[in-house]
Image 1 (cartoon, rainbow, N blue to C red):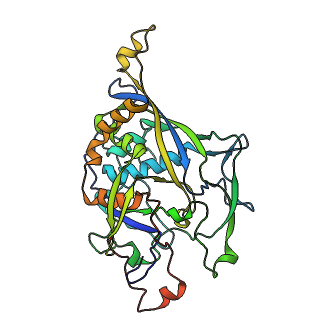
Image 2: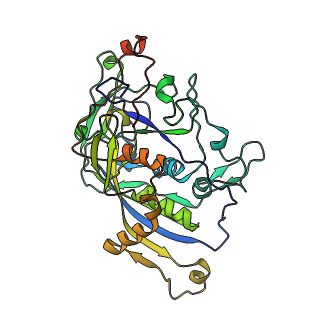
Length: 368
């Protein structure tokens, strides 16, 4: 998606919200705030690969007891990165990128003190630097997503991905400033035309490609997310990054491309090639009462369970503030995360010759 090109780069930079109020976290021994358990399903809409290692031919999916599994740590990392973007969290993981580091503005720098944390550090955890570093373990945890299908349906795909980092500065400029200021987060487009395949590798890199054993679409997984002592704004953010939105309309680029559909997640490896699009759905919500009330009785647990229409209504109430948010961040976020099966755009990186040509190599990505 460089300017004047018919194809679209697989990624875009989305302007992040400013870091919100930094406050002391509610810690585990304090019986206050929201507590509960969310049971969620995952269905992959395109080929999915979560790599176990960098070795092997082909490289295999992560497994538990000889069955594919999406580790809870991978889920937590994905949800945290989305929460940092739309919820006004700090940049907890800096992309050092070897010789091509990504800058991070001071206003978005990683929280440095445990008693002064942004919303995502309060939710997902934080650690100070130095020899006497203190740790806040966070109030949200994710279990592994276990495969529900009896018989997995794998397929081997050729994949070639270079290391991360700001290799081509014009592609990493913030859309709102036109400079390399680091005030954005990188997201990858969904590629509905690759529901059963992945993007074709350029001939120049095919010999260096490695093979991965990915799962074909329509596999189902299940995981749980447990939370405790969350404030109202923290619970709303957690529910939004898990649930997202089901009906969004956007218009993309100077071509005014109209798209409509739900927002969907991206997880795993080879996202630039079209892998990793998933539908994550909250299937059941167990709401626990105030801990003082819960532990005061051995006879009644006071757990409230929501499913079906009642569940959708309650989630909708909590995430309404994000659904109605028309900020620049949310506008770009929706354009990146929308899944429209009628989207026929071609996604590709420019060729080596394109980068060597001085008439093209300085062109930035088209505006969204």
